[in-house]
Amino acid sequence: MSYFFYENVMDHYKNPRNKGKPDSYDTEYGDSNPTCGDNVKIYIKIEANRIKKIGFEGNGCALSMASASLMTEMVDGESLDNALKISEKDLMNELGIKELGPNRIKCVALPVKVLKMAIISYISKQNS
Ligand code: FES
Image (cartoon, rainbow, N blue to C red; front, side, top):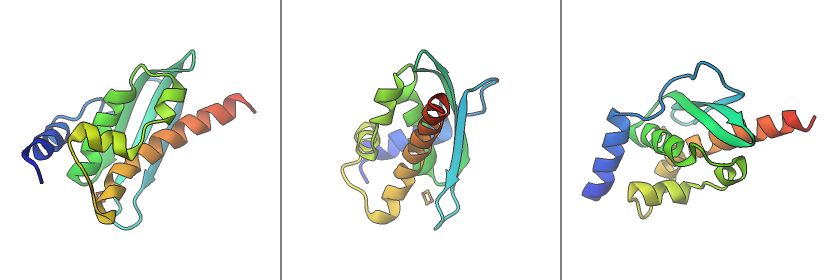
């Protein structure tokens, strides 16, 4: 584990950005990793197809919580289309992680999955 990786993960884990449920939001989605039970829930306020406000709640390992925190910073203010393009690799790059084994990639994948499901759920409601 590189020092940069450790520092970045611990910074987001100890001082999570956008943690908590916003006063109002247009879509939400929560899920957990079945193997460990760690969970993340995302709340998004949307205006003109752009993320106006995003918050998250969750309990889990340092990597899953740090990934959720970093991800909310990365997509805040972005269009829904751009937010849907975010990948585990993007989060790993920002955290300074070159590669992760299958047991740890799920920690980064959880917040990405939850974000995408919250947006897809919003879009499908708009189109119904
Ligand atoms: Fe469960 Fe990381 S160990 S999400």
